[in-house]
Amino acid sequence: MSKKISTGALLVALAMIFSYIETLIPIHFGVPGMKLGIANLVIVIGLYLLKPQEVLLISIVRILLAGFMFGSGMSVIYSLAGGILSFFAMLLLKHTGKFSIVGVSLFGGTIHNIGQLLVAAAVIENMKLFYYLPVLVIAGTVTGILIGLIAGRILPAVRDISRHSQNL
Image (cartoon, rainbow, N blue to C red; front, top):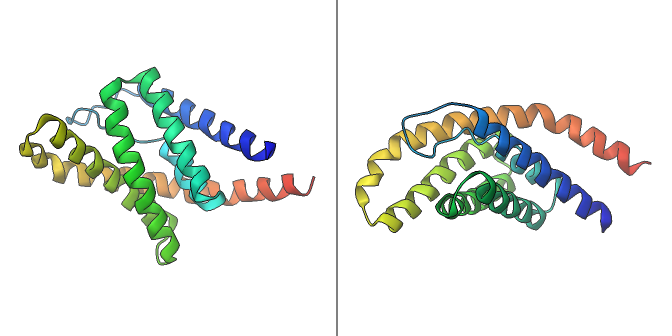
């Protein structure tokens, strides 16, 4: 049990570091709130190493902590909506066994942006926000592919480390 808690805490801390680094990167895509989503690397890798409920908890804790440290109350709401929707979408695709880690991540990045857009449209009660949909789909696709490619490179090494630590 203590190994699960320490692993979860380590992954939350890593995601928090990635979230902080992302605040330092001055990339503006022309759409408010759009980010690279580097912290989602932890979630994508977690889907392939941990139980779904553990990854969901890590995702929620990371979103809450990062949102309150680096964002605002509204950013927490948008991130939770996107993050939870994205998590379940990626989990579903992963369980089909028909998609690579890049495909799972790509879908997750796109769904994350769509989830945020749905909440934003509901909050401000303006459907004109859906004009951003093509831009958000493209951004989610690009960032999802990048995160998936990086996760695909890191996952084998993390699995080796995990196996090695179990043998100790």
